[in-house]
Image 1: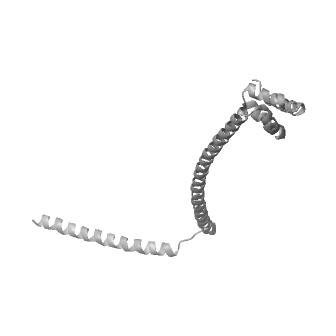
Image 2 (image 1 turned 135 degrees about the vertical axis):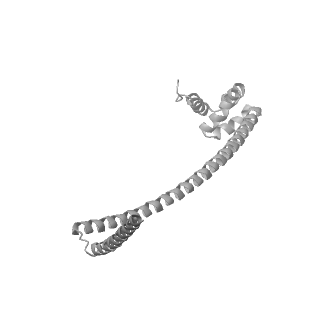
Length: 178
């Protein structure tokens, strides 16, 4: 028993000594870290480099904001352009429909006039055609039945008839052959 008691006493002494060393090491480490913070030696080049990096970071953040603002502005502009393009396409569609209606109406009017001129007696129609511009008269005569236009041309003044004939003959002269 005596030996067991000695072993236990030895263990307590050693345990107590280990705790004392651990406490001393901890306190010396805290003092060393406090001393090292106050004694931190930095190179002047590192501090300059740090400040330059921070300045660049600020400039990059500003540029990023500007680029972001421009990107948003471009997105808005693209949306407006798409809206305007859509409205222009719609307006063009409406305009082409209007032009088509007007062209159809004009074509119907010209067809009616051609029918009127065809039903007139050549001696009554000839004075009208002689007062018309030759291009205009050639347009009507070319749409008429050949018999009716021939009868009117026969009654016209020869110079007027010749001018209208030349215009009618040359209308498709400039058309592509192929």
